[in-house]
Length: 246
Image (tube, rainbow, N blue to C red):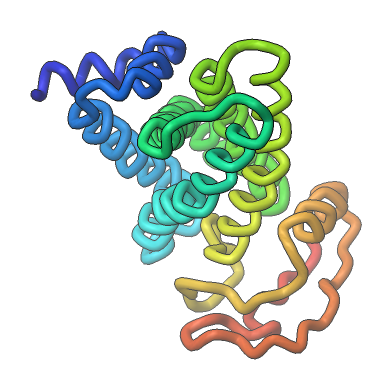
């Protein structure tokens, strides 16, 4: 079993078409399940830990826990969407095949995050700013998502219709994954914060945050819109999140 799991891990990166055929054929899923789950948990945890190196302390543990959690939650939420889209657009797949495909795609995405971790670590070590590091993390997340969609395309059928299914699914996956990660923030942690929260209070959305971070990385600072949602227990207040412009 161990040798089979290692072989599946290798194919997740090098041969997505073989993994997709394995999922579609409904072959013995144990090695695929174990390899994909290990890749998701370990790869995403390593990436989360790297994101928190600039803050250190408890943020390392929190981020290493929350990045895998974000991927797993997204996986659970998007499986019905892919199954329904494939069936309605003429590329029907068994639900078991869809689950295997999405799990494998999530594992592949986590391995890509793991591969990008040294780049992020180097950027943080060189003193990249907080807002620039947020944008860098989002870019890595996007690249991982594209690699996952590539594997799913092989599974749905590498054709024009299959591409349309994946394009429609991407419209579900991208906002779901982005907003899930946004709700579980912070992953990087602001160095100026006196204490490390596990979750931050809800404010605006992922898209708004990327816009504000893009402005802040250029030295243009704007306060987020006030939010009427109460902060969850253990989350920081707006005053705790305030950051002075350099």
